[in-house]
Image (cartoon, rainbow over all chains, first blue to last red; front, side):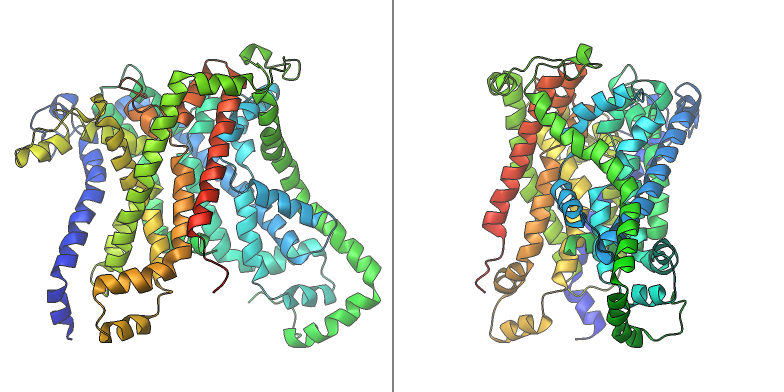
Length: 276
Length: 319
């Protein structure tokens, strides 16, 4: 069958996929177009497709009257710190569990496996009491510390490091390298793909995280973007759709850009976590 | 790449046991020290912020701890199973449990069906625009649920919303989706499916790589239809993938929270309040003991649902 013939036979498949594609992407297009419309235009029936009088007023309101700059800063600091912590600590533990023998190793691994699937909703009440007693409510450390390491990250790194040749470590030992130097100079440079996967997943998870930030960020000082957006969308601005769509755009567009740049790696990462 | 040594690894491999054997004690001590040094920072954070709260959550659920007991969490009254019996008798929690079951029982199969359809369509030999479609379908997954819930609330607006406008073109008078006790929950499920099917689709696509092409060809020669081949070749091979996707999707959906929080505030008339949302509400009212008991009930249900799925979907060992 020629390529052309195969295309003709599959036109219905392309039709189905195109319809699905339009359905999936339209909300984002609508969000961005709506974010530059005035509230009067957003309320018009039937709705306008292309903005008649594009305005940046919604974004100005967001950053001046609602300090979205501050929330953007908070979200960025939290996500970057959490990601850095996970990359460092999880790869170190993954290496120790995969390549070193030490007392208590099996117990630690059992603990990690046992807590792999424990959902956030189970621990947030005692976690809040703990963080409150540490005096960290409504602070960025309070947002960061509980997520600085994750059992999932350790598991992912251990599985990846188990696939590396053990001879590398033995050879470095014979050359007289210290154990920490072996981790830092021999193993770490080989972890690129695994670190990329874990880094991307952790950053997204942190950027989009909602329940814990909602619990611990009790004041505007430490709101992250999703918390701020959720609170204005349920507060007195709940029908100010221009403001809300602009807010959603500010939350979504940065990760969308990062995603489009790294999408190949993203998708491979998701596929590998699923195949384990 | 990162081998600072000129010694070929194969040679080292033969030498290594002898070397470590002759100096076993110092080498083992060194490894022991390094192992603990590398694990310690993780262990401290993990025990403090994950393991300890898991244990404390059980303790809290057997007490009447409230927000005024914040500084003295161990000086509270032990009330046994009272919080749990209270939960079973609480009409709003029962409503929330019902809503959560509704969301999971409709949402998980729907999400998997859409994901599998998309994966099979993308895998059926099309080459043009394949990666564009895949990218588009995956995009909602990376976005904040809060943000997309805000957008969907606007899309579902009864008058100015795009959904009812589009329905109007074909002569249908769309309902007030989020303001209706009948339509609010299906609306949330539709949004969750839209947001989440991309992950399942990517995992199904990876699973489909494991289906041998030769089997399909042989079956086609024997006269098997496309549906028969899908049913008797593709589906059995995808079984472990289906198990994985259904377990992870169900675990996520059992905790759904942002959707009702942003789109309906649990309404109308509690028709969309979820178990997680009600747990959060009780927490924010200061009823920590009750919230801990509710969160443990959610956890127990997650464990049971996961076990059931393994029971019915896991591969049998006698192959």
